[in-house]
Image (cartoon, rainbow, N blue to C red):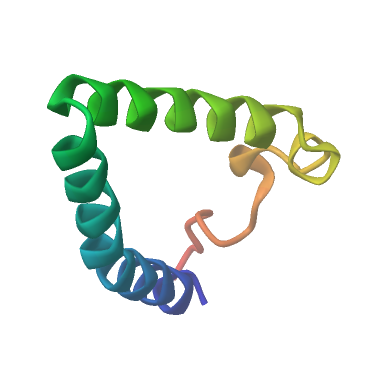
Length: 74
């Protein structure tokens, strides 16, 4: 299951890269490349704070307690 989720996330990120480059290029050509880098940094901080404060993500169990990563005795 983890492999499938990782594959979907990598596919979505790969699809989004050209759109991000297009927006970043448009902002850089209208203003300055510095503004597009500052804008990307602000957006990353905003999403990081959002995901840290999201109640569903805060209530997930610790990764140590998941049975996916526990070794079974053969």
